[in-house]
Length: 245
Image (cartoon, rainbow, N blue to C red):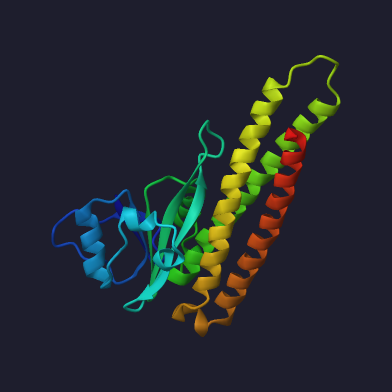
């Protein structure tokens, strides 16, 4: 799916529906969700950049995830998905800054994206241009990760009370299962936070942030938030390990 958010528009509009489709000049955010090759080509021709394939997005080398090419800044982060489900996963999502436009490429449905998209549709002022949209979207991702870790910490505290307050002879199977799941979610959240920290550090090299102090300050604030949440994740991991032991 290809959809486009235009500057000041109240919602997204579909794109790439005809062979001669071209990106509107006032496009702010171009979303590629599980795109077809035709949709990828339409965006590539419109912005003059080659987009990474799904296989390239999955590579773990820093040089494949964070790079600048032909005037565009390409950044791939690992995002936690389905944290409340039976099988929490972490999947790559790519952000491309091309001038005043943001392109996102993903094959998953992180809740942070849908939440921020809904906010942008209600408040077009949230997305005046691509760089600000990029930071707003990352704000939503970081907030979502923090919420997930808060719920995980609450679950760990519940299981801690169950362990040390249990009657003699009570089995540990359910407790072990819940702690194991908490550890799984926390580990994937930490992987995501590490990748976000690298992405934010690399983003500071983008020309869009060089001459805008407000954007740079927002970027630094996000870096501090990610570091703080990463520290909390490390503490949580140690607590879970202690309880499992």
